[in-house]
Image (cartoon, rainbow, N blue to C red; front, side, top):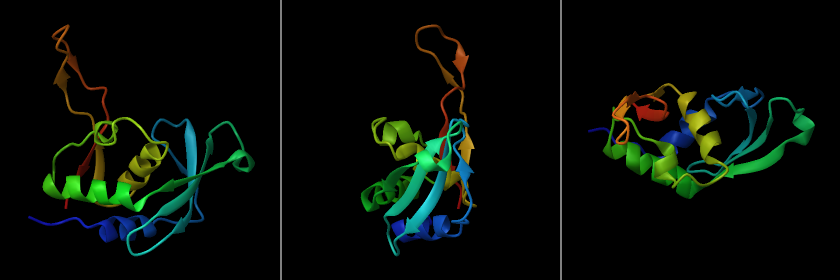
Length: 134
């Protein structure tokens, strides 16, 4: 089984154009990478609302620890959907930024697996998951 290392994540994100502005998948926020510290992070960025200008951007950072957690979890479950909200206990301002940057790299994909609502029995597919497909 292939192993995903923290440095692999950093190198994949480093392939993205740092002069470009990227949009979150919700479309509500924009992000621009400002610094990538190799070999294992952190990744610094600016984030601002899609209706605001970059002048109102706030600084954010994806820590080495967050990158290490992602590498460890995805390495143990390749080709398996992972819900990053649960991975980080739905916390952290940088989780959405990390999710956005990951799926812009070649081996990460967004998916919406179906699940049964335990209360209504209806099928739902409204939770975004990320898959690492080496």
